[in-house]
Structures are given as C-alpha cells and as structure tokens.
Image (cartoon, rainbow, N blue to C red; front, side, top):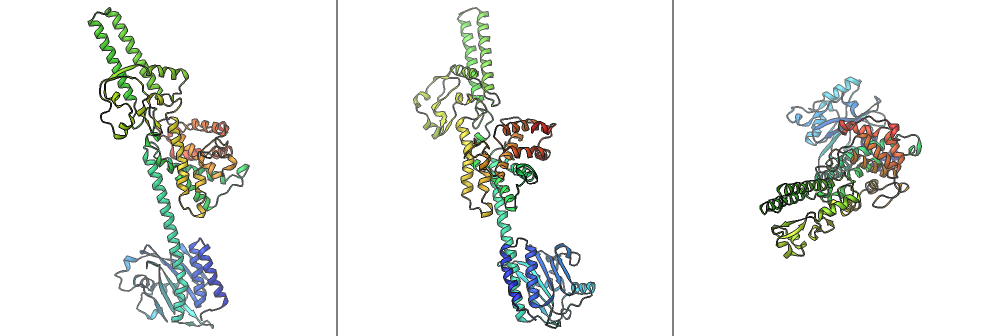
Length: 559
C-alpha cells in the first residue's frame, strides 16, 4: 500500500533540499527513485536515461527483495544501450521502448499478459530467480517536451507483502514525485549549457585577441596551461609557506576562467604596438623609407661628383676619393640607423648624439607632400603651403603631423628609444590593457563562485615588491592564484617562439631571467621555488617548446 507516513514526508522535504544542494546528479536521481519506490511500496524500480533523444541506458536498478542495488555502468551487461531510431520499425517493442517512442504510460496487473516484448523482464526473472507481475512505466520529459528518461516500477505490495496493482492515484502521485528527476536533469543541463556558453565565449574572445596578432597567437591559450601546472604543484606542497595552500572546485574554475581572460583588454591595443618588431614600425617598417632617403643622398653625391668633373673643379683622383668617402660615410650612417632600429640593441648617450647629428643631414623633396593623404592626415599638417612645394628636409624627421593623438610617430623620436622598440606612450597603451581588462571583467555579472576572476586576472602585472601595475599591490596583498597568474604570464612570454621583437630564448636563459626577477622582488619567491623544484617549467617545455630551446638544466643553479 502507498506509504503516507511522516517518514515519506520527511523524505520529500529532504529531496527538495537536495535539488538545491546535491551536485552529484546520479546520486540525486537515485534518491528520488528510492523515495518513489517506498511511497508506492514497489519491490523494484528502474531508471532509464535517454541521451540526446537517441540512446536509452539503464542508469539505476533497485530490487528490494533481491537486495540488488546497481548504479551506472554496472547495468550495461544486464541492459545494453538501445538506439531509439532502430526501434521505429520493430513489430514488437519492449515496455521501455514503447514508453520512449510513443510517450505513453504502461500500467499492467501482469506485464506478461500484454503484447509487449518482455524478453528483458523474463531474462531478468530467470537470471535472479524472480517473478515480475504488476508493472508501471512512464516517460519523463522536460518543459520543452524533450524525452529525458523512463521510470519503471515492478510488483507493488500491500501491507502483507502481497503483489497488487498500481492504482490510478498511485500512478498520479508517482508521476509528480518522479517529475523531480525532470527538474533536476533540466537544471543540470541548463547549468552545463550556460557553463559551456560562458567557456566558449571566453575562448572565442581569447582567440580573437590572439588572432589580432600573428605573433602572439598562442599566448591566451598557453597561459592557462602553465597556471594550472603551477597551481597543481603549489597545492601538492607539504612544507614551507605553501603547505596549507589549497583550492576547491570553484577556485580551480575561477583560475581557469581568469587565465583565459587575463589579456582581454588587449582587444583595444593597436596591432602595430603589440607586433612592433622594430622602432620605426607602424603598419610597416619605416626603415625602408629612411633607406630611400640615403639612396637620394648617395645619388646627390654622385651627381655632385659628376658636375664637379664636368666643370674641372678639381683633379679626377681627388674628386673620386671625395665621392667614395661620402658614400662610405652614408653607408656607415645607414648601418648605424638600422642598428638603432633593432630593439635588442641598447643605446648609449653617444649613440643618441650621433643619431641627432645624422638627422641634421638634408635632402631635397620635390614632390607635393599633401597628395594622397587621408582627411585625418591632412588635418594634422599645420603648414600645408610648406608641404605643397619642394623643400629641404632632414634625413630623420620629427614632424608635427607625425604626432597622432597620444602617439608620436616621429622617426628620430622612435629611433632614440634606449631599449626595446616601443615609446613611453606606446608602453602606457600596452600597460593600459590591464586596466581595460579589469573594467571589462567588472562589467560581467559573474556568479558568486567566480567573484575572484577579476582579482586573479587583473594582477598578472603586479609585483610582490609593490612596483607593478595597475594598483601597485605587494605580495601580502595578492592571493596565491593571482601570483601564479603573474608567473604563468611571464614564463609564456619569455619562452614564446612567435614574438617578432626577440629571438626565442633557451630554457636556461628564461630561468636565469626569472631567477633575477625573484631576487629583485618581481615574482613570488616561494612559488618560483616550487616552479623550479617540481619541474613545472619542464612539464610545460616538453609539450609546448621547440626542442632546440630545451637545454641542460641543473636546478640547484636556479634556486
């Protein structure tokens, strides 16, 4: 007989709580089926899941009198998966197949007196020396009428243990109880769908940022890998300052999301700055423009030599020596300018003085500089009349029209960058990406469990000595995952083989640089030591670095 006891009510209330708290959906379904079985006093219950409206699988089986309780893959041998499209043309379907295909309820006082294919039930009875009599099965659907499962109960019993029918009232109440399965599965599917949507959106955004530059196309994809490797090593520490460090499921997911999104602000950084391989590069490397001016000066020198020869200004030998000396000087000056254009070459005060001197050389421009300009370029020229007529111009120029908004594209100004390829304005723009990243992430309504995404992602340019940006946080003000992000970002950038402004570095060079960063307060020393001792660098290198980069490492040299 149906159990209307206080115990059943308590079980129902417990199920309501479980819907909000239980994360193991297989266990939740088992709890619901158990409560339903007790309510109707059925000896046995079965739950068949339906995946993508195609495959029927026996997920849960309980027969009380046989003391059989099976969950998941244990049931595969008893009930192999059924492919729904295959049963369409079957002359005789099993009760479960009929429920799934026709969306109908089956309630029988003796299932073997029906026209259904009862081979599964007879096989079950024979295998376990059991006798199935009364039978109830019904389909479960979600709110969009998608089939998600079939519930089956066998052998309802009265208070004396006698097998009875499943009444209409019991059937209605069982449908209501088991509808909790539909609710839980629909919630699970919705959560998974939204999680997949969020992750897909994040990956699309990260790949779009990488795609902006052909030279940093893997950065946003590889930083999460390094971050996960280092976080795993830190969690496994059982001594030192990190021995109590741990991460729960939400922390891991937060780190994963943050590491994918840590550079999302770069979507606003101009490509030519991100990809700036030389000092004169904007959309293209302007060293070719400078070279053409040297070509003009050489041609002018040749013309001057010929004119002097024609006018017998001096002896042929003297004029030739003068011309050769001038050409050699121009060639040497151009080599020096080209050398200064490479960011790896640090400039001294003498180098800057020489650049200033070279820039004062002049050539004659004959063609109208105002032709072929965009309206914005036209507006940037103050003395349009001067630019419209031939004029003498410096070999290396800092013109007013080369200052565009916050950026100074002046040739001499860029060539005089002491180290690297970018100017202070371009550096500020690059640094700004982290501020934009933080603003973008703050604008997203992350759920509570992901509330630290902004903190983790926004701290990858902070330093433990407080000299980083944008907030100048110290190590004590940063969480361990935030400091992990900083190391992951640095290591990927140093080992990258796709940066036009630097040659790929060997692993020993990278670790030496990072050791110096540890010693100078740039990165967390405890995490760095874990990075070296637990060979996180090698776990990553063996999978993602060029074999030529991996040289012999003696870990004691880097601790």
